[in-house]
Image (spheres, rainbow, N blue to C red):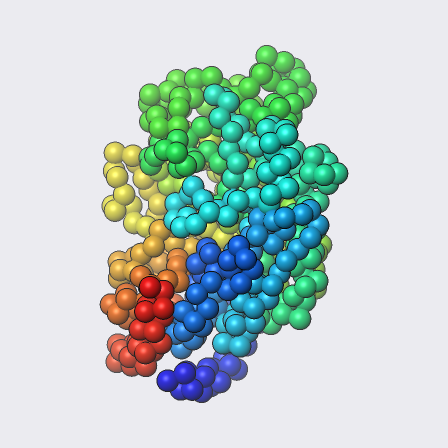
Length: 492
């Protein structure tokens, strides 16, 4: 069966090379050509001991994905694992083995530079802390961590307020991120542009360009709470104070709005976010402009470095933006505002992000593509479909390629159909440049889920107007059954 899979692989190599060339050089693919599908690998694919986790299951899984027509995989390259013990000392052993497995199976790789901690977010199945030496620095200076108005610290990702300060053993956080990416490039330069086709640059919690405004750890936040502003560490407050003084409003520099409620409030429960609230006042405009611009500046700094490091390497750079769809139907969009996206009924918060990414030739990677409006709690005014459309329009205006992910694991036809629709209807003349499916594991390889997934991959590959012949889907699903069954057994 494995031999049959590899023979089938050889037959489509030429077709794949054309698709990858379009993906790397052209951003959004030619209309009607279909969208390549990638699959996220388990978060713990590389162990803390620098080996490949569940190696036999991994091998069988990769073979099955390849045989199903998947373009490649997405893997988290954890800062806390690779540079975990000592500053400037990198251990790539587990990733070298894993990348070599992908190369041998003919799978392309989206490598995520994961500068955040794993654990405490939706779908986190393991815990991988920030590097030990970084945690030691945070212990010495707790203001390196994002902080809310009640003094609660968040240790998922370093505060962007200290981006340019030498607070990490003489290096700035941006220098640390840059050194890590440079070491990755140098260590895997033989795979760049061939096996490794994309570098997704981590920008915040869960790898997303946002503030940690809705942390699930310890029950701090629960869906569909509005979240809370994260600007109370001394570095963020210093910047806010300077901005207020520059605006001639010194009294605005003491902190964020004091009437914005708590993590689990609803908009109308707070003076700041309610329909005619402070968000729409001169102070609100000042604060939200500063808060969102700090996030854009952070993205600009890290992207500038990434672009320089990977220039002429044959890989695309991408950035992940969160799909914050709850309370989207309100005027103020509180959960987006607390996360750093200045998006309201009267202001487009995604166009500035898209333009920033476009200026670096980066891909705009967006989540919640699988969701439908009617599936969400109507009382929370969740509108994921409208949000995805807004982002698609913004990326079109900015002329930046759009890629997608599903926010939650979904293996049903309804989710697949919604993804296909969203991926094929980005605009009149373009489709998504890629879609990354959450996630490889025993649930995906269950018989019914796998059959639906194989059909989904074929549909994505054929384009909007084509329809896969189900006898082909059944044949493909049946041909990979031994591999899938083996993978399920080995996951245990």
